[in-house]
Figure 1 (cartoon, rainbow, N blue to C red):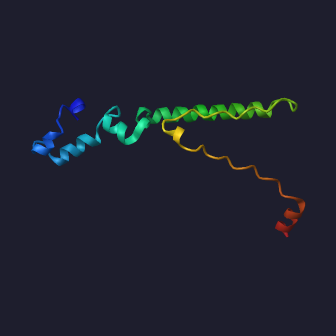
Figure 2 (cartoon, rainbow, N blue to C red; figure 1 turned 90 degrees about the vertical axis):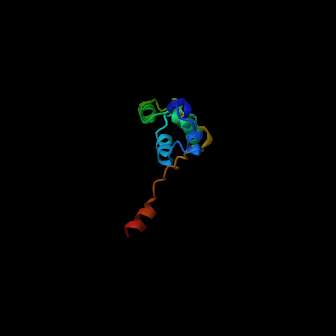
Figure 3 (cartoon, rainbow, N blue to C red; figure 1 turned 180 degrees about the vertical axis):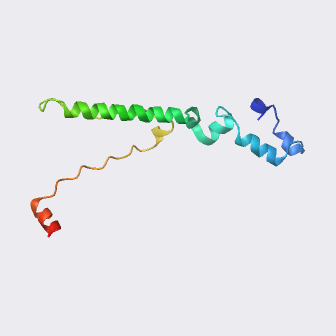
Length: 115
C-alpha cells in the first residue's frame, strides 16, 4: 500500500482511511505488488496476451508435428510429440493425460450395432 499509493495501512486502524477506500485500493493494486504475488503466485507475471501467445506456440508446434508425422517415410523413426510452453504454476500440476486412441470396431460389432 505504501509503495504504490503512499498510504499507510495503519491509517485504516487509526480511522483516517475508510474501509471502502481500503477495499478499492486493494482491488486495484498493480500486478507487481507483494499482495498480488502472495495471492496469485507466479501467474501475476503473465498477462492474458502471454497466455495466448504460449497457446499459439503450442498449437503451431503440434501442427508442425502432425505435418512431419504424416509426411515422414514409413521406415523413419517416429517423431516425439512437442512439449508445451511451460506456464507459471503448471510445474506443480499433473500434465493432462491424452485419451488412448480408439480401436476400430470389428465387423461383428458393426453388424450388431446396425442390427
